[in-house]
Length: 165
Image 1: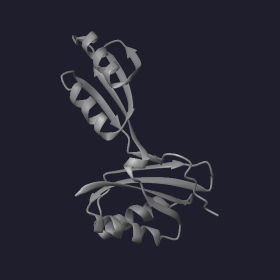
Image 2: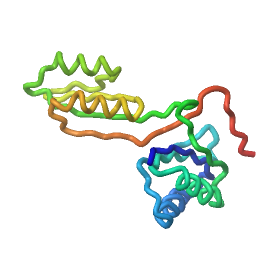
Image 3: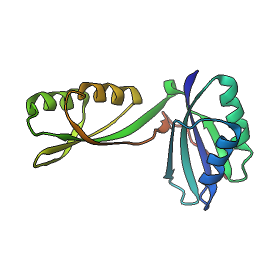
């Protein structure tokens, strides 16, 4: 079993996300992460889905999702030719914490300190899933007050252009 990433370009209509997630539920496919965003075309939404399974399962997901009326295009995202990122926000208690050690970790991972207030520090990191996991492990010795992690977003490298007309 391995993680797979796919992107759906769908009509920007009410209920499309419900139909996509319902299809996954009915077929017994698991969604590890799901991100919906606008595109350069206001009539089209981009849905990025991370799922776990074998190639047969992933192929079945692609075939079934392609059949949805609102699906304009669906494609697998190949990590070797794409950028796949997540966003992480973490609020860390600074009461009694070794601030210099924390700043060193933040710097090492290329994270940003986006809010420093009395008793807390909020860091932001946009990176691959593995880098975010490693960052969370590195700061695990500090008291995390709150954490928010987005689903994956993905874009192919280079001059790949999708004609939806």
